[in-house]
Length: 620
Image (cartoon, rainbow, N blue to C red):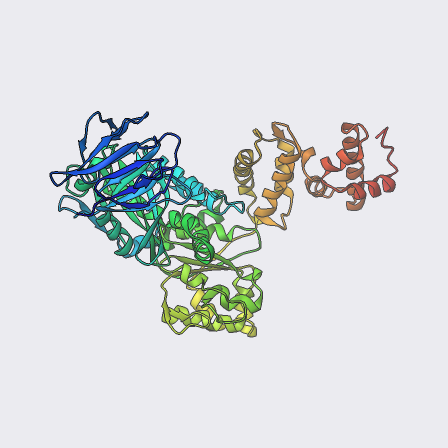
């Protein structure tokens, strides 16, 4: 009858000792189990057989012998999975389980041999749940994303992620087990009140190898953990477990347990399934981590709030009406307009109001991709496809599958890539660079351009067939100068945004500033308006934005326009410039650097103006 002890204290973590009869434990070299520990006596305890049962006896030690946290004063019969405490060392007797030590720690996970019962609720993963974060709280996604994407990721990255998990799914104990080798699990994270955490081996196998989520309403009431309940000090009741998925591969399992029966519900399990992808990223190393980071970087846009479309003028009302009608369809939409008019915002609104709003929204700026990298960026590539392709890369088309692909500045796309895009749209499949496997995709295509694509198609610089494929529904976004009625609403919206971003308390803008904003031609459109307001708010501490705080060019253009050009343009601009420079210098008490900041110009430009107008910096 060869029984054994397994250590899970400070010394010999996970070490197995086969018992003899008798078997003495202590510091002395004559002991069958010798442990060098100042808290253990030379001959501390003895384990022996009596009537075919193992018993443990205290040999008069200073610190005593404990069985399941109870000090013994006479020989005590041992039962499978009893915890023996001898000095600072703990042992598990006759374990019918696997002992998984955590590296650099004194804690172990005990995987109990068990059988899941009918009362345990098994939840299979739906195909879409593997990649969808739609069940996750937005705050969780954003908080964990900021942790995972940090360049200075610390060693306790997984601990940081699990801390965020606990805010949304409270637990009394938790464990993350990682598949360090085939058929082998290694604990990377253990949170429990004691040195060990007992978990179901059956649940681990279901979640890890069969890629299933599992919920057990009452682990003690079931026989799931019956064999191990003597080592569960916290009386584990409710249990949920989910696989850690990376590229459809299960790399481990996460357990959460609570000491209340039926604490976790089906919705909690769905949330944990979504969290599993993030937990997997924190557990991954090297190439796996790199691939998953890129996936999540795009998936994060699912939770990015869609900015409000400001404006109540006729043009914006028509655009909003079109979006409402078109969003529920799967039709391609071509959004045209000048740079900075908000074309991407319209695309995001179409996605947010569409049927696939919980799916990925993948935005690609075609003007920012070098021609030589277009194919690998959109289609992806396999390892070894070309020199430097050290791993597999998922392309934008594949990332957008079942969601929305937004191609901004599509007029910049090279003609050869236009052919491949058209083929993928028509056949709903493509090949990665260097790949032989067909990748099936089904996404909604939205495109935008500040160029005249119809004219380009006629000239042959853009494919006509792709133009007609894109322009199923067209939305023309007017420039800001053609919709002055929306400027005040946009300004107030940006002030609210910038107050939060800059930590300011700006309450509004005065009449002259608003008049200047209305009369300016806005070559940079809405983007320029936001940038000007951000510059003004960053450099001032006033509660109201005044006309004097606006950039010099905007003031001179606006005031001249308001004057109706009643005076000679050149003379009027010069007079206005001189007046503004003098006022700025007076306010800055002759300090030219401060005056230049107020005027929104550089110090060298101010020096030139001072010389041109012969302004005395001390007299204004």
